[in-house]
Amino acid sequence: MKTRITELFGIQHPIIQGGMHHVGYAQLAAAVSNAGGLGIITALTQRTPAALAEEIRRCREMTDKPFGVNLTFLPAVTPPDYPGYIKAIIDGGVKVVETAGNNPQKWLPSLKEAGVKVIHKCTAVRHALKAESIGCDAVSVDGFECGGHPGEDDVPNFILLPRAAEELSIPFVASGGMADGRSLVAALALGAEGMNMGTRFIATREAPVHENVKQAIVAASELDTRLVMRPLRNTERVLANAAVDRLLEKERELGAALKFEDIANEVAGVYPRIMQEGDMDAGAWSCGMVAGLIRDVPTAKELIDRIMAEADALIRQRLAGMLGH
Ligand SMILES: Cc1cc2nc3c(=O)[nH]c(=O)nc-3n(C[C@H](O)[C@H](O)[C@H](O)COP(=O)(O)O)c2cc1C
Image: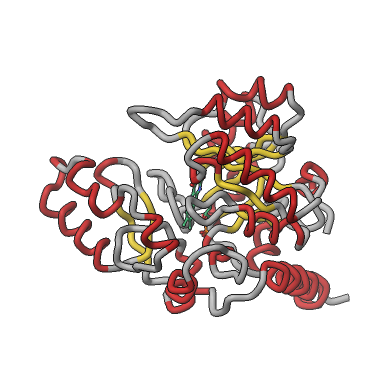
């Protein structure tokens, strides 16, 4: 399939694997890229720029296809060494960066000068327009369904994507709630040029996370996610578990007085215990409503081939057949 996104990134299929903390290692990124999509390494999971440089090198050993790096700009008291991470990306010859979180404007000149294409992830049309105006090459439009941080506007993709299509000139991919060929065809119909998936890619064979995480996603229904940290205006969609119940109870009790310290036990530094050790109640971890559509753990290639075959059949048979002659 050829879209503005496949052309922009030099990939075969318009499918991107979004950055994921403690999931987006070289193994997964390489598997997705080898399958014809765009795999993405998550920079901040690597503790230092040197570790990111090594992860990029490892990925390049596993694939000769394009892959990207996610750089998430979080509000932080002591910010990570962003200049160092950018240098590792540029020196490592990576040609695509997925930015997320705060406005990436400050970092665009050095990335552009090095010929890096930037796709910024946003949850609102106004943020997508801002990304376009500062020179991003594309955006990833993340609807309210998404795993991770859906923002505070709560607009689902059935509205958000056509609104983005009405306003944007640069190409965009649909993100949040995407799982299969139906998602891809719907995203294209709503004006996107491809799709970005997070949760679906965790439940693949190559995702370097504990088997318990994959099985939790397979077992979950679309009713099993919760929104946490709403009172802090840092909303995150996570899979329900004992720690999340505790966290939500504190949110109810403390109301507007809630501070980050009150819930730090449930959210800070919990990812390694969940993703690597498989301790599923260790804390809150991002997961999309799309878990309700995920029922198996295929390889990245099986997943992507299946999506593209389904999309082809949907367009050529189901949709074309409805038009009559
Ligand atoms: C476990 C997990 C960790 C994530 N970590 C990040 C991250 O560090 N940076 C980021 O920009 N997005 C992160 N995301 C969001 C994904 O890149 C993607 O936008 C989102 O998962 C799309 O929604 P979906 O899960 O419905 O496919 C994460 C998502 C998950 C499920």
